[in-house]
Amino acid sequence: MSRPYANPYIAGVALGLVLLGCFVMTGQGLGASGAFGNASSGVVNALAPGVAAANSYFRDYLQAGSVWTAWIVAEVLGVIVGGAVSAGLHGRFKFEIVRGPHAGTAQRLLAAGAGGILMGCGAVLARGCTSGQALSGGALLSVGSWAFMLAVFVAAYAAMPFFRRLWS
Image (tube, rainbow, N blue to C red; front, side, top):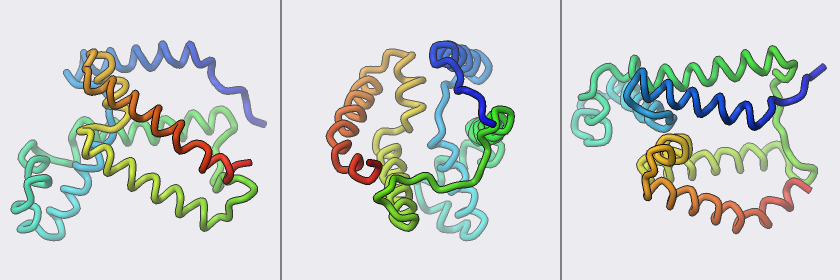
């Protein structure tokens, strides 16, 4: 039997304290997209070191040190483990594909994959994911981060009518 979700106000304050702790302990804010940059750089370097060395994107990650022990990789692994533990403690851990009544499983997986790719490309273009931009950049009062979040909300509301058909 599942338990109720956490109080959003308490969770928001807790997230703010985690962000503050991250700034104090690492000197950097929260984010996630850098972990995927580190991981992809490590994989490319393991499979084709010459390609990684010749590519400026991969080279930047590789010059920073070990891509597998970077703080952001540990952060993302902690988010995955923490989310699984929290879901297990609250009776919500299960493997399923959540979809609306008008979307098949293949359509849902395709939409999720396309959305993930678009978000990844957007994170590269925006120089950070929504976590890094909204939480860390917003907390630092970065004008670019606030503009990014405004654009995210405008785009989401503009796309909502199309995606609502799949869920209702």
